[in-house]
Each structure stands twice: as structure tokens, then as C-alpha cells.
Length: 252
Image (cartoon, rainbow, N blue to C red):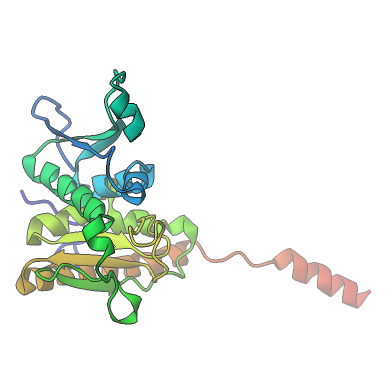
């Protein structure tokens, strides 16, 4: 049975069961190590942050951990080092998930590499330039007024990133939640993008991008309905006691 977006399918009105991102068995794990000791300092700092690793994990399904320690060039040349240089240890339940994580890590390293520093990083309107062979679209969420208790970010991503996994599995598109409140650390800024919260969709083919766009919009429409229900069940508290006290004071 194919996976579905949590709380939404193609018909938008049918609730779907909770999705388990991958089997709990660990016997078929695939692993890879990426040495980042000599990566550009900005990329190295980003890749060792928990938020960055969590975001990559949510979008790929792979688990990422930091191992070893940073070894400066002078230490390396001394020949007395018995520890491994800083590296990322990646493990996943499928080669596809592993490759997605490796691809994202490589993108962050390349974006901060010397050959990229000599090239313009921004296009019109100070927007990051995507690779020339990649179709990109931003789907604005438009629900920034949702109260914190609604957990907008958690509902968009899904448990363990299940909703983003579904979009990727169905269309082949890479979907990431970005902008204010996303907890996505933009490599260009080293922090969240100042843009409004949005789903950032990337695909190599226009038709794949269109399919991913539709699933993203279905998800947002479902959350709009869920927010209405949430607000109806949790109306804002009114200060009845204050008005009563005010009336008593005026009458006296």
C-alpha cells in the first residue's frame, strides 16, 4: 500500500493513517562516511549543528551524527594524531535515502567552496540561484497567524518528516520547509531565511515539479481546515472577570 500524506491524500478530504518513515529493523542499514574536517569553515559549522542534521534527516530519512574531531593542518603535519578527523556518519534503511542525505551534504559543502565564492550567489531580488538544470518553486504556507499550540511546523512536516517523504516518493521532488519558523538553516545566511514560511520544491523535470506542487497545495488546504477546527475547539479566552469588576466599580 503506498504511503500517504498524514491527514491528506489526493482527494484532500480523506484522512490518511500515520506513516512510519522506515522499518524499525536495523539489519539492512546502509552507511557512509563523509569527511568534513577540511570543508570550508561555514559549511563545517552548519553541518555539525543539530538543526541542520535534523533537517537533512527529515528530508532524506537517513540518520546523521558527527564523529571524530576537528584537526588543524598544523596538527596533521605533526604526525602525532591518533584520532580520526571530523566526519559525518550517515546510516539509512535504503540507498535512496542515503543518496539524498549525501546529496544535501555535498550541496552545502559546494555552496561554500572556493569555486562558488567567486561566482554570484544571488539573482534578482537577492534570491539564491538554484542549479541551472533544476526546476524550483516556493509554495507559501500563509498560516503564520496559527497559534503556537497548533504546531504548524510539525503538522507540515509530519511525524518523522513523513509528509515531505511522501511528496518525494510520489513525485521524485525534494521538498523542504524553509523561512521564518521552519528551523531550516539556510547555508547562504547561516540561519533561517527571513522569508515567510514556505515549502521549497526542487525537481529536475517541470512535470515532476507540477505534481509536487499539487501535493503541497493539498497539504496546505488540509491544514487550513484543521486550523479552523482547532480555533473552533479552542476559542480565545475572554477576560470576563475584568469586565465584571469594571461594571461593579462603575456602579459604586
